[in-house]
Image (cartoon, rainbow, N blue to C red; front, side, top):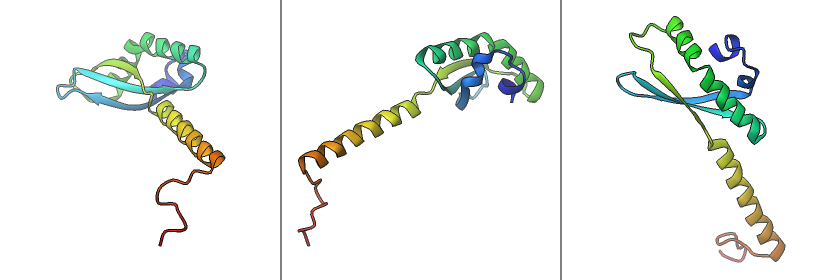
Length: 112
């Protein structure tokens, strides 16, 4: 909510927060995000988040009843990109098998 409503940097518009790991003492939080766009746009979105860090912490302090608001460490979440890469590789394997007529183990119709 703070990112969408209060942060005026247009580069933050490409950002989606995907998770956070907060230490037990609430001193630190690793905040994971994904960003759409070219690699340059992702770098710019990362910079925009880091520039807005103090502003975001203040917004959290205003909205949450916490004794201490954690220091924020923004980290790019590459899970979606990794999953997409795996999907591409699996499709390439399937295409190669189809091209050369290979049948994966267990997919033989001759077995009973």
